[in-house]
Amino acid sequence: MTSPRSNDKGAETISAPAENRVLIDFLSWSLKVNDPIDALKMSGFDVNLFTQCDIGGNGYRKSYRYGNIVCFYDGNDGMGCHISMSGQGCRQFEQLDGSAHCWEYLLHDLFAHEANFARIDIAMDNVDGRLSLPRIRQAVATKSVRSRFKRYRKNMEGTLSRNSQERDSETIYFGSLSSRICIRFYDKAAEQEKKNDLPPGSLGHWVRCELVIRKERAQEAVKHILNGVDVPKLACSALNNYVSIVKVTSENLSQCKMRRWWAAWLSTTEKLKLTTQKAQKFVLDIMMHVERQYSASFAMIKKYLGSARFVDFMHGLIEDGRDKLGKKHDLIIAASRAPALDLPF
Image 1 (cartoon, rainbow, N blue to C red):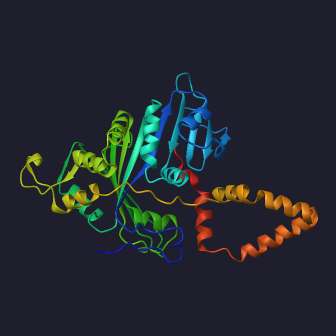
Image 2: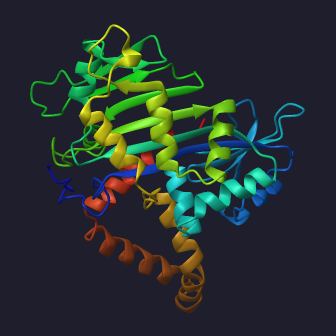
Image 3: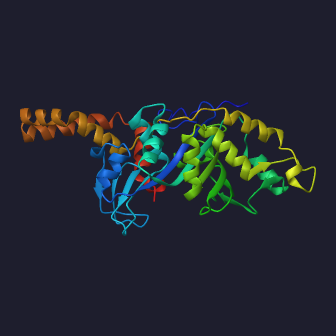
């Protein structure tokens, strides 16, 4: 098996996981309260981290935001507040909490407050090669898929540039994006290489299977988790219930056995523990860190130097820092300039 690799130039920020993993990669819920401060407190968040915005979404007029964690409010009567965490929002939540059991605690508290879960995404990352897009592609082409879905969909994207070495990106979908359950397989390595301008192949083998679970199915999924079902086992069980790759030995696919590689991938994945991942840094995060940790120091320096000399001091500080900027800083800037791709609305 090929070991996952990280890109040397941007290893501080972008790398493939060291081993197979399972992540919660999106979570959204509604609470029957109209005050967003109450909703954030009920959800266990430090309200001082959030900024009020006159930007809404999901049928709400306004929001409170911290990175990619958003609390929507000011909707129609009976809508209460809606909190949504995208993939990066989930990573930011994990970083804020710091506990290995952060998801268990959050879901328990939300359920106690009668939260209505609208969506939960579970991502299964494979880096050991057991799961591959060519195998999935061949299975759908030869109709070797036992599924509760009647159709699949494939999306391809690539560059027309003759000078680019960028790999084509491919996503295979089962179920529509608006259905109660949607399953998609894609090359996560190719996606991250393109997004972060990394050399093709620099991240090695990294294929992701995502389960997007909505509405009452999301509510049931949370209940199973709170009843002690491990998230990886829940994900594999749900996946195999909707999509299974089989060796066709009969026209009745229910009588056909699973392909060995598919069974092996499911078997190893369901034994994993739910993983947490370090959040990607954004410029706003660093600005908030500087404000919290160094604002008093800057005020002291200005008081000591006076306004004119303080401006000279800051100018020299920035000039010195400019010489120290590297690849990791470029990646943080690039990610910060395109946050809308991951915002939860």
